[in-house]
Length: 139
Image 1 (cartoon, rainbow, N blue to C red):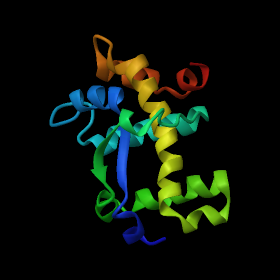
Image 2 (image 1 turned 180 degrees about the vertical axis):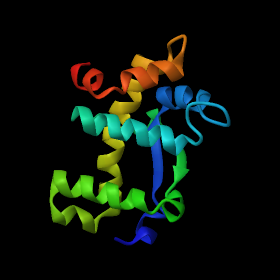
Image 3 (image 1 turned 90 degrees about the vertical axis):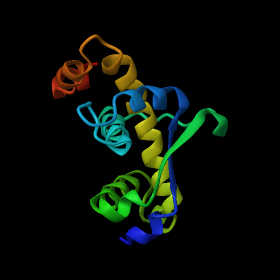
């Protein structure tokens, strides 16, 4: 694992979910940083076993560059393990593909978060309640 290989890769999320996540990011909000919302979306997508590609490049928004991996190198390990489990060892030669796989899982999870939790009256409570493992696997 070399974190530097990921530093120049831009991270994207769908435009519509970016607007939602951005509203719930910051001091005193559900997510400290947008990467935290994206990461939760990634985890939900993986847990539910669902991926969602971008319909087109024009419907995505860059929210961060890969420099986040310099301060959070554990994320690279997780991304590579996920890609390895889905595509095999050859995928590790292409960091963009590794991030692309994670992004598709995150896209699904972000859409789920927006629809199921964040647009509710009590979004923080909705997120906590809906992230119960039994609710996630059933819903």
